[in-house]
Image 1 (cartoon, rainbow, N blue to C red):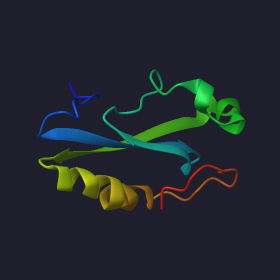
Image 2: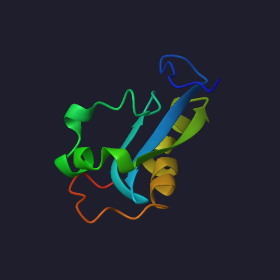
Image 3: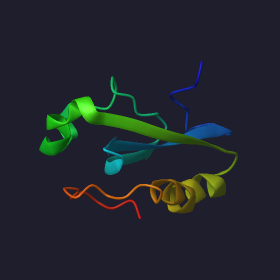
Length: 99
Protein backbone atom coordinates (compact mmCIF):
# COMPACT_ATOMS: atom_id res chain seq x y z
CA UNK A 1 0.00 0.00 0.00
CA UNK A 2 1.24 3.48 -0.82
CA UNK A 3 2.07 5.78 2.04
CA UNK A 4 -0.35 8.74 2.11
CA UNK A 5 1.02 10.65 5.09
CA UNK A 6 4.54 11.34 6.29
CA UNK A 7 6.13 12.55 9.53
CA UNK A 8 8.03 15.81 8.84
CA UNK A 9 9.82 15.53 12.19
CA UNK A 10 12.11 12.71 11.01
CA UNK A 11 14.42 12.09 8.05
CA UNK A 12 14.04 10.56 5.64
CA UNK A 13 10.44 11.55 4.99
CA UNK A 14 8.10 12.07 2.04
CA UNK A 15 6.70 15.30 0.71
CA UNK A 16 3.67 15.14 -1.57
CA UNK A 17 2.84 17.56 -4.36
CA UNK A 18 -0.85 17.15 -5.22
CA UNK A 19 -2.72 18.70 -8.15
CA UNK A 20 -6.49 19.02 -8.42
CA UNK A 21 -7.54 18.99 -12.08
CA UNK A 22 -10.68 19.61 -14.12
CA UNK A 23 -10.36 18.59 -17.77
CA UNK A 24 -6.61 18.24 -17.22
CA UNK A 25 -6.24 21.85 -16.04
CA UNK A 26 -5.04 22.87 -12.61
CA UNK A 27 -7.72 24.22 -10.25
CA UNK A 28 -5.90 23.81 -6.92
CA UNK A 29 -2.63 22.45 -5.55
CA UNK A 30 -0.89 21.65 -2.30
CA UNK A 31 2.57 20.60 -1.12
CA UNK A 32 2.48 18.85 2.25
CA UNK A 33 3.08 15.71 4.27
CA UNK A 34 -0.27 14.29 3.12
CA UNK A 35 -1.24 13.06 -0.34
CA UNK A 36 -4.56 14.55 -1.46
CA UNK A 37 -7.38 12.11 -2.13
CA UNK A 38 -11.05 12.85 -2.81
CA UNK A 39 -11.86 11.70 0.71
CA UNK A 40 -9.37 13.97 2.53
CA UNK A 41 -9.24 17.07 0.33
CA UNK A 42 -11.71 19.20 2.27
CA UNK A 43 -14.47 20.59 0.08
CA UNK A 44 -15.08 23.64 2.26
CA UNK A 45 -11.90 25.35 1.06
CA UNK A 46 -12.45 24.74 -2.66
CA UNK A 47 -13.66 27.44 -5.08
CA UNK A 48 -17.32 27.19 -6.16
CA UNK A 49 -16.53 26.19 -9.76
CA UNK A 50 -14.53 23.24 -8.40
CA UNK A 51 -17.40 22.02 -6.28
CA UNK A 52 -19.84 22.35 -9.20
CA UNK A 53 -17.55 20.08 -11.25
CA UNK A 54 -16.64 17.61 -8.48
CA UNK A 55 -17.59 14.62 -10.66
CA UNK A 56 -14.93 15.70 -13.20
CA UNK A 57 -12.14 16.12 -10.63
CA UNK A 58 -8.92 14.17 -11.07
CA UNK A 59 -6.08 14.23 -8.57
CA UNK A 60 -2.46 13.73 -9.56
CA UNK A 61 0.32 13.46 -6.99
CA UNK A 62 4.04 13.07 -6.89
CA UNK A 63 6.02 12.11 -3.82
CA UNK A 64 9.58 13.10 -3.02
CA UNK A 65 11.77 11.41 -0.43
CA UNK A 66 14.04 13.86 1.36
CA UNK A 67 16.96 13.21 3.67
CA UNK A 68 17.77 16.71 4.96
CA UNK A 69 16.30 20.15 5.50
CA UNK A 70 18.06 21.34 2.34
CA UNK A 71 16.37 18.63 0.25
CA UNK A 72 13.08 19.42 1.98
CA UNK A 73 13.34 23.08 0.96
CA UNK A 74 14.31 22.17 -2.58
CA UNK A 75 11.04 20.23 -3.03
CA UNK A 76 8.99 23.29 -2.06
CA UNK A 77 11.08 25.73 -4.09
CA UNK A 78 11.92 23.78 -7.26
CA UNK A 79 10.85 20.16 -7.63
CA UNK A 80 7.14 20.69 -6.92
CA UNK A 81 7.13 23.69 -9.28
CA UNK A 82 8.48 21.46 -12.06
CA UNK A 83 5.68 18.95 -11.35
CA UNK A 84 2.98 21.65 -11.52
CA UNK A 85 4.31 23.16 -14.76
CA UNK A 86 3.06 20.12 -16.67
CA UNK A 87 -0.50 21.39 -16.09
CA UNK A 88 -2.04 24.50 -17.61
CA UNK A 89 -4.07 26.64 -15.24
CA UNK A 90 -7.85 26.34 -15.51
CA UNK A 91 -9.42 29.50 -17.06
CA UNK A 92 -11.26 30.22 -13.77
CA UNK A 93 -8.17 29.66 -11.60
CA UNK A 94 -7.77 32.59 -9.19
CA UNK A 95 -5.62 31.23 -6.35
CA UNK A 96 -1.90 31.67 -5.70
CA UNK A 97 -0.04 30.28 -8.70
CA UNK A 98 2.27 27.32 -8.12
CA UNK A 99 4.77 28.61 -10.71
